[in-house]
Length: 466
Image (tube, one colour):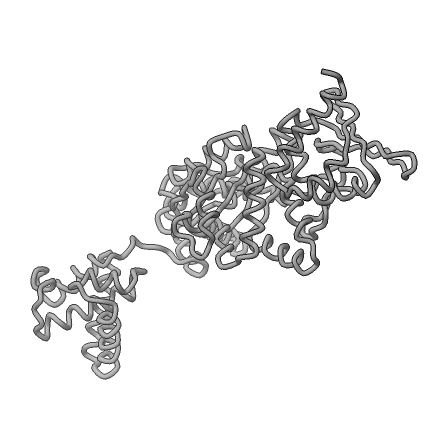
């Protein structure tokens, strides 16, 4: 085989792979006229008809072509152009590597990220918060799976079983911290990789701007050049068809190219609504890691670590009091501790349990064990001297019916259970019966002071016995 034949085979391999991503018409128009003139394993030289070919390929097809060349022949291949003498010559060189000296670009203003002419890539701000690292993240049973998977991703991004890594849990449990910590770890271990963190709300705003300005192609190409893409609050895609289509293309391109995706959400993929099934399917390809509320031991670690960073000396009995009484939300724990330390400083008082009780009730809601429907039913039955079997029976005497209504009212006041769950747990009633019972109790309290006093007493018993 001659050298020219070998060069042609190299270029033909690229064209064959392009057929899976663009139309045959585009290939005939923009790629068939290009001729390979040299390939030494590190540099690919192409003869193009004119400069418009260079500019068009860089603008429209580079995000597709570079990953193909990298996959076939290596990540550091440089592309050189040769333009006929009758055309204006160019000396620009293209490379798939990231120059360390390049200036950052503002990712909020979506433009074509490639320098024209030439396909030299620019570094951009990864949008990571320097406070969210693994070094200052507290590990516990509540987050061990997500943290361990995140470290595995950072060691070998894109080439692991956790792609995408989907982290979900309630607000304030540390999803964003772990996701951004992965980004920081990747940048330390693989400084040549492009990392980008963006919230879905910001992604949506960028998409709308790009759509308005006719820059959807540039928008998609920008995200397709990212090596590790971190999307926060992916549930915000709900109902946004246009954004879902754009993200689908970006997701496919990155995943196919061995790039890493990290997604966070307040719900598992199966509970997301109004998001295309093809996207939901892809969200399930990797690992879904749930963040639970921190247990007592983890809360103690969080409080100690936060106090150390603040330079505050918190007695162990106060640490225990905070861990036992502040709700199991990492953000609320940190906020409460900050309030306590600040108030101790302003009032020139020692940090004691007494001060904690006085100060924290202004800033946070001290928690008790979760009040359950079962607990409420037991209190109501004991108060009205009704045995549990009678309470749950079909009996409809006035005292039993009233006890059920009171239990439903208290369940609605003290639990987050849906009305259907309350009804099914109290006599197998439906949600309409629960609504009627709650209204009946409220109306009776307005006109009967004795009954109101009974309800208030039952309420105190429920809280004190819990």
